Image 1 (cartoon, one colour):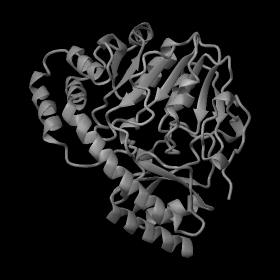
Image 2 (cartoon, rainbow, N blue to C red; image 1 turned 45 degrees about the vertical axis):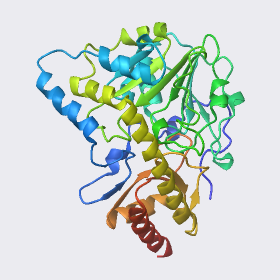
Image 3 (cartoon, rainbow, N blue to C red; image 1 turned 120 degrees about the vertical axis):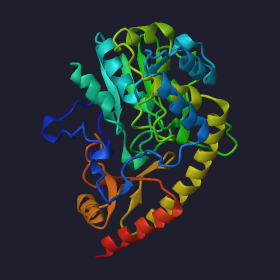
Image 4 (tube, rainbow, N blue to C red; image 1 turned 60 degrees about the vertical axis):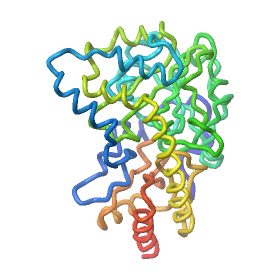
Length: 365
């Protein structure tokens, strides 16, 4: 079984005849009565240290939002001055701001497969986007040399959605250079863990020495805040000033700001590390169960809250799963993948066991 395309040349533009639907996202897969393995948002009771400040903020909605306290809290978490933080209405808004503020870039490049909103935002703003397609035969690993040397805007996810690959920080840092904006989407960085590593492995969030680096972060995944819309950008103050200039006034609501401040605190960071460790064990269980199924290949070495698999006839399998009450994410809407790919969210072992039993039955039919 083979994905498509494999080994594509550096700097590939979209093929209009086989253009994937960049606007398709996992929430479109979910329906009434379906077990959700399509969306990568953790669904768990909200801890009191997060619920209480969000609830308290509702009494202060007559005032316009004040981002300063949350900005300072996020900056302190990452060892940066507040001027190097821009709060956004979810990570997705950050991509729109980039596309609008950086209209002067000449050669924007997006490394795929990855979250499609960065390219969609660039194209909506009139940019001509080039793609670097990573090779499934090589586990979707990044070779920095494949990125065109004269690309003045480069976008890549780490860990990458949908491949779940965690690229080495050194490989990403090798892409930074004067005259280039390097955007690293770390929306799922807080889902990663490594033995003996106290924080987030391979994160560039605290790096202030790399020219043009802009890190995109999200608080909606681990803490189940997709409906609240809260994220932030980390980078040099002059670059963030350009993005802030095209951001709508009061873009981040008061409840979202309360969540950002709470999620930047020591209790949140400690809880994140514990959740990431449990997630790693749950992911290993899912990978083991999937790997035992005939005809199913797990891509690369998954490091996040989801696993990408390749299997023949994935579209029919996805439809059969829906008939039996399970929603998974189709892969063919991601550039660099094709119809034989599915993304599956990591859940608790009991849910994984029930899911893989149904999947085994479908594959045996």
